[in-house]
Structure formats: C-alpha cells, structure tokens
Length: 178
Image (cartoon, rainbow, N blue to C red):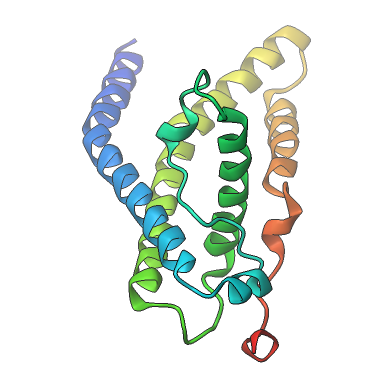
C-alpha cells in the first residue's frame, strides 16, 4: 500500500514537474517547424519541386484547431503535407544542398532534439503505463498471460510507424538537383 501511494506520488510530482519543461519544448518545436517551413519557402520554386518539398506556408496547430472555420478541410490537407515533409526532415535531415540557409539547418537540429524529448517523455509517461495496464486488463479478461497481450499490443502499434511510406523516401543527391 505504501509503495503504491509512493508510486502515485512520484508519478504526479514527476508529471507536474515536467509540465513547464514540456510546454517550453513544445513551444521550441513549433518555432523550429515555422523556421524550417518558412526558410525552405525562400528557395526557388523549381528547386523545391525537385526536392519534393510541398508546403509553402506554415500551418500551426491553431489553424487546424478551428473546425468551424471556412476552409478547415483545406487547412487539414496542407497540414498533412507539412507533416509528411517534416517527418522526412526528422528521419533524414535536410538535403545536402549548399543553398539552404544556416538558420534553417539550426532549426532542423532544434526540431530533431525537441521531437526526441517530447517523444521520449510521452512514451515513458503515457504510452508505456497505458500499454502495461491495457495488457494486464486483457490478461484478466481472457486468462492468457499478460506478456502475450503486451507483445500483441506492441506489434499492433508498430505498423503505424511505417505509415505514410513517403517519409522514407530519401532526398535527391546534389548532382540530381542541379
């Protein structure tokens, strides 16, 4: 009983202690996304097309959060294109091309670090306890061992990482760009 109360206390203290830090990291993440999108929008249109860079303007979370605004479906589609390109940037960095400004390269480094921090903390504080709890509840209902459910739920989530597959496409080589 004491260990359970202590565990809950640590969980709430850790969560509330990390909350201001996570808000700051989320703010940095949004700022770096804006810098990446706006910095790449300064490049030539033909160059962006050869790179496969679709977004031209930054779509923030606040643009998508208003479902009753006119044109919210168009905002959603633009946001999906932006997310796809940012996933490519997250996985592969920026293309090796000399015309990209240093501010954009710095923003990419910040974006990758902030995303890693948000993903790591979110996975540890939210996903793993929920995954653990769900697997134990399923084990109680079915009588199967919890490890089987833990593995099954983990394997069920894995394909979500591979969607959409365009994010795995590498940037063209500098020789192909010219």
